[in-house]
Image 1 (tube, chains in turn purple, brown):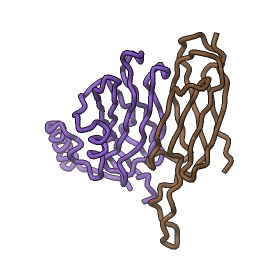
Image 2 (cartoon, each protein chain N blue to C red; image 1 turned 180 degrees about the horizontal axis):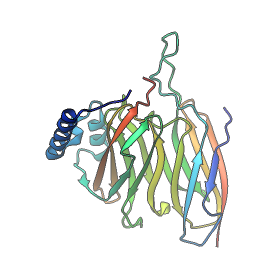
Image 3 (cartoon, rainbow over the protein chains, first blue to last red; image 1 turned 60 degrees about the horizontal axis):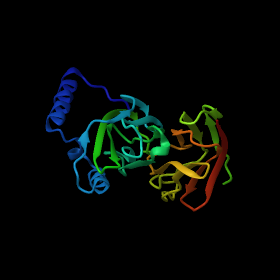
Length: 150
Length: 108
């Protein structure tokens, strides 16, 4: 499936995207249970933006294998480290992608894997620190061919 | 399914405190449980749902995988060299079986 936009549609999309940013709540558009998964992970707390870096291609030609790297800015010492990182995708049939568990023995909070994305959507990473604070990052990936056998 | 994972450490010997990068790849279908076969029956879910890495018996990294992880799952992560010993990577399948791979790290 290839999407071709004319100028008007592209503009409308851009305006829509800008609107989403203005609302500041990409999760509000979630079609699956990504919202609930994040709430469950954070225990109802709202994660702050920052510290988390989610590296994904802007355009994924094949949704079956999309390389994803998540890095969390942390000294990874006993006093201050990342314990878990939850990754969700808000338009996949199921929201869950993976949860990574780190400890001071990890040295660096960084993990890379390859994920499936069924359609163009946001991938959201939420990191839990050992002091109970949460940080998040999200990134939109445009998917040309969906990766769920559809 | 006795598959042998491919594991690569970026260095086999490290100084204490060095960061060692691990890359690993396993052959696995990672069936999502959402596809249907030609007869219209749902293909049952079969994925590796858990991954744990221990170095000299101490857990350094773990991950829970969901159905959105690609077939032949690849994982790359890092750990801080603390002591010499086996680097054991274990994946757990939905059916309870495990895939285990091992490398050795020498810390000076």
